[in-house]
Length: 123
Image (cartoon, rainbow, N blue to C red; front, side):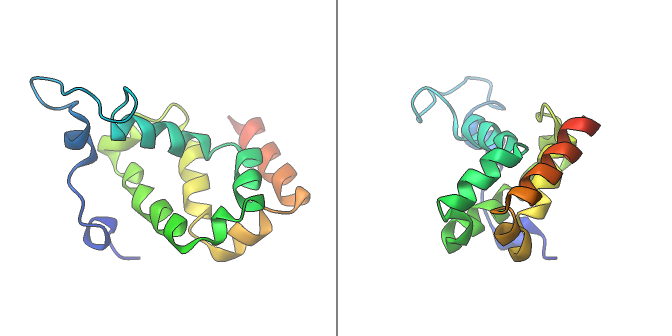
């Protein structure tokens, strides 16, 4: 797999948020920084029922949404993983979402139930 930094030449997400600057910037997205919004969203991916909802809305078939999921893989790097409340389930879901078969299978109630049991019982 190609390095996501090479695939997505984006500035450091923390520097975009103002969290590493000595003077915090006014957050431009409804009072939140881009990093905070991405963190909130990526953590929501640990919920199998939410993944099922995204699939039912056909977002998991949208090429631009799939690219966004690839971009979010920066959360797999240690300097970003430390911000995740539940890194195990979050990163597992992010990994699974990179697979087309999983993006199709999550529509099925059996897959949702299996994933919910796996994620909620272990964590």
